[in-house]
Image 1 (cartoon, rainbow, N blue to C red):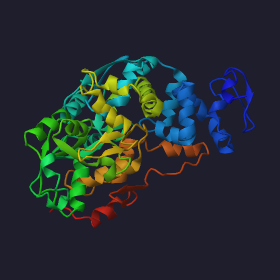
Image 2: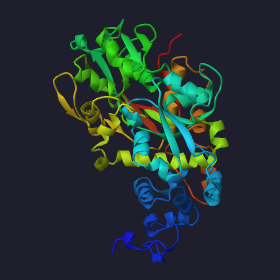
Image 3: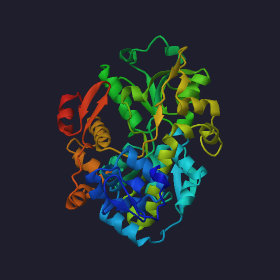
Length: 447
């Protein structure tokens, strides 16, 4: 008999030697004694935060209870989450405005709307398409948007006060990994060595974006001075191809389907995918200000639940069929479905005469990592967007995870490893997020 055949309301003996009832089903235990200890208190919390059995089973089987608990402490302390889950309090705000960008990174937001996932969690979400990152950031800060899609470094930058006032913000979930491409105009087909790119004009979506930071790093590794040898132009993603067509830029590093559209329309080619620079890099996130989260803790929890479920849905290969047609609609990305399919399906023409098959061209893992935030903030310091003396690890903890999550788990006798400050591999070189200052001392920085 399969575990799922047990009635969830009946007691059933698990392979761990324990019986489970109520919201804690047999399916929620993986059979280890350590996990049984966790289940005594916190698996009930997991069941409360993620009441959908299928979603919960996917999470437990893919990442485990301890990882989920740590991730759930990303924005609020677990003690607060426990209280919210126990209280079953009504949402402070059911009608919420969520901003998104017309790129494939927004897939989980669109699927949450189209598949009724927001509604399932008690939310009436109005998705607002915003043309640029600067504008969507400003609308979040001034309260026009409750939560919004943002490129990953935005929450880091606003929390550190880069380019303006300090506005503490949190990354609720990661929308996607990968999903960008470095595209050059067709006239540069025979000029693919970045050492020869002095004088090039590149479009990026925002100065403090992972696209701009990855491009700077790529150029610096080739021996160029990213501040002096090239020109950057901030261009909304929807305008990449038109600017490339008329010769305003030589290339761009940006979210899809811009790169694939440049290929299909015969104006550019894919020099490389962003995953070729930094595999599984974070791209967009769903972000909210600290102030909004504190004012709407139950609504936040509902948004969090919905987005994790939407990320899991979007990640499943069996759900990818038909997504392109939905995303292609005018109210969303407004691009040809066959172009979008090449991005989310991973089989695509590169504009150089080859057809590539890259299944993870875009991914939708909802859980953030400390090390991702550290690399991004270190690059901002490297290029004088943040002060050199920023505590990068503390900034990552503040933006990505509640700092007391591990302490709360330890009080319950649960030892949680700290893989978050781990190793990232960028252009084949290891970046140790445990020692960001050493990295900064080792790389060439502008004067």
